[in-house]
Length: 108
Image 1 (tube, helix red, strand yellow):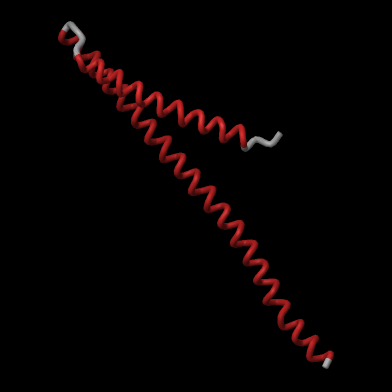
Image 2 (cartoon, one colour):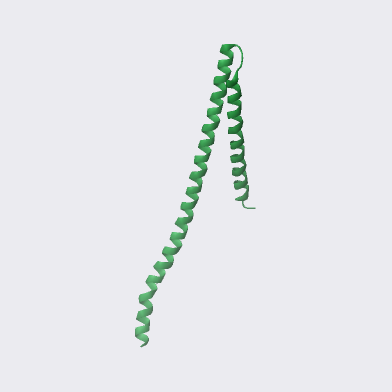
């Protein structure tokens, strides 16, 4: 009888070791995947904000060029300023999120 219990024990041990190892590995892999997804979301948001700022700058540049060409400013400058203000508000919010995230993740 003890021989049967010993064989049963040695038959189960490899499966348990593999199961625990796979569970730990899967947990670490999930954590890395979640971090990558979060980083990708932040990168996409950053690029969107960068494009928005670039667009508002281009709009302001065009408005100023047209004002110089015509000799007086018109509604194009106001539209450019509104676009620029919206872009800057979004950028500042994103910047604050990043600062808060980075300061929260620092080890003190």
